[in-house]
Image 1 (cartoon, helix red, strand yellow):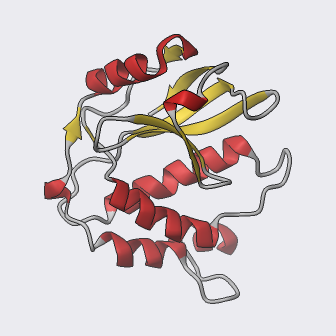
Image 2 (image 1 turned 30 degrees about the vertical axis):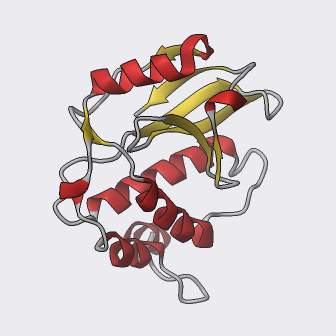
Length: 174
């Protein structure tokens, strides 16, 4: 089971890269005292307002508070995640795996930010998205300007409100 320990502890890969070490190194450049806080009810209200009829359901939240994600944090985190993200493999490591992987490491990034008490207002959306055929999963993020966005972790691409036409999905986790 050494592979599991290596995965959990963040053992360096063949090139000497270690995502958890990079996360710890870069997260210390931020200070959670500067982050805005949002409640689950506010998260739900903003998601309903932004997504409108495209959003069919939101799962109950598991935490009492979240930080709105600063754009500077997402930019820094995306640079790190982009170095380590796995290759896309249909049915093995595809949209649902990328959404969960991205969310997990984003929460680990939050955990290493000095003075952090909460994680980021981010989750996973599941449903039909017009930019891809069939059922799909993507991340849902609320940024510091209270704008809700869909995010594709495998492409490191953000989708904006005007790009949601024809979508129908639910938020299954945040």
